[in-house]
Length: 145
Image (cartoon, rainbow, N blue to C red; front, top):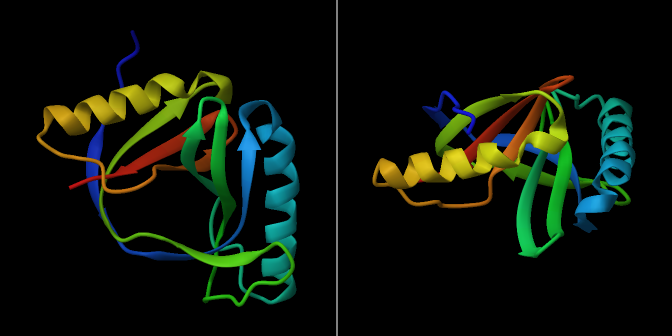
C-alpha cells in the first residue's frame, strides 16, 4: 500500500469559472479536454485569467458516475457564458496530499485522505477537488472539520 504525506491547510475561497456535467468515468478524459479548453478561452476573452492551474471537483452519484465541476481559478468573479458558469472553491480546512504518477492511479489518494481525516477525529464537510499542478502531479484537497 502506498503512503502519502498529508497536511492540513486553511484555505481562502477561490473564485472560479467552470463547466458542470454528469460524466461517466470512461468519458472523463474527453470531458476534461473540452471543458478546460472552453473555460480557459472564456477567461482569456474577458481578461479574468486563468489565475492558476486547472482543477476538478467531484461528487459521486453512483458507481462509475460523477457530477463534475471542471475549470480554472479566475482573477475576478465572472458572470459566465454558454456552458461556463461562475463557481467557487470553498474556504476552510482541507486535508491535502499530492499524487505523483499517472492519473488513473489516483484512487488510493482518496482512501488515504479519508482515512487520515477519520483517524484525526474529523469528518468530511464537502466534495473533494483536484488541482492539476503539472503533468503526473495532482494535488488532492478534501474539506473537513
